[in-house]
Length: 120
Image (cartoon, rainbow, N blue to C red; front, top):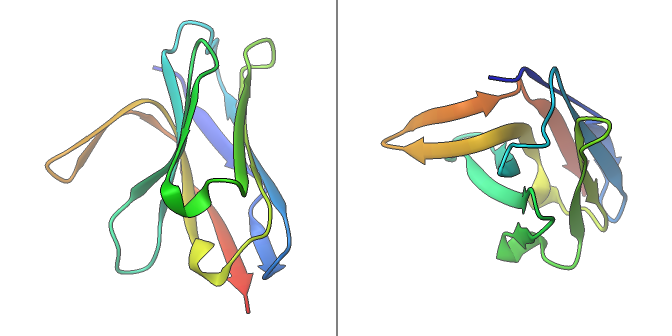
């Protein structure tokens, strides 16, 4: 399994932008799905965006049109560009490789998370 390290989180005002990066310790070329999840205080971890090895992307309805996920296989890095941020986007953002969430457990490779806080 690859090790994943997220970066780019921080404090931003509503309407602002952040770009998250997820650096993998090894090649992500053959990893079918790379995803970004977030977990707000007291809430379950939820999928924000995912991208397949072929470049197909999927987004949560709440972030469509504002967030863009991309992957650079040559750099073994996945990005999440977040624009027009809202206070409800606040949470810990996790990068995951071939993630599976089942019965409250998390399978696949996960990073340690990066905090995103959006002030109103």
